Figure 1 (spheres, rainbow, N blue to C red):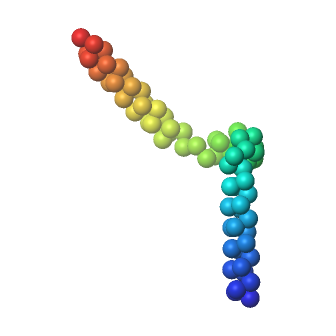
Figure 2 (figure 1 turned 120 degrees about the vertical axis):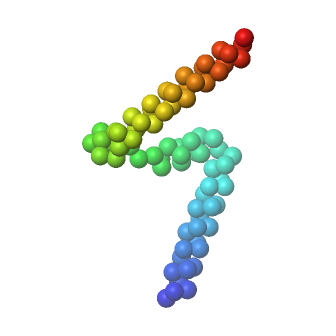
Figure 3 (figure 1 turned 180 degrees about the horizontal axis):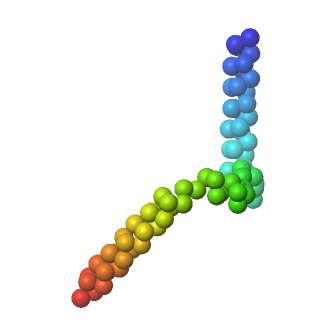
Length: 78
């Protein structure tokens, strides 16, 4: 029974690889494959998943970094 499961798993992995290799040369198929794997989130799910406090901290840090970088760039011109 275990060998059957291993063989089935190996076959499905091989099938996936074969399918992927076939789509490599086909830009449209590759794009379709990529977008078909996306799963949209509803606004309720996003609200539940996003840690708003952490997000605000990260945004503040990125704003500080960009301001600092902008100051360094201006000093570099002088």
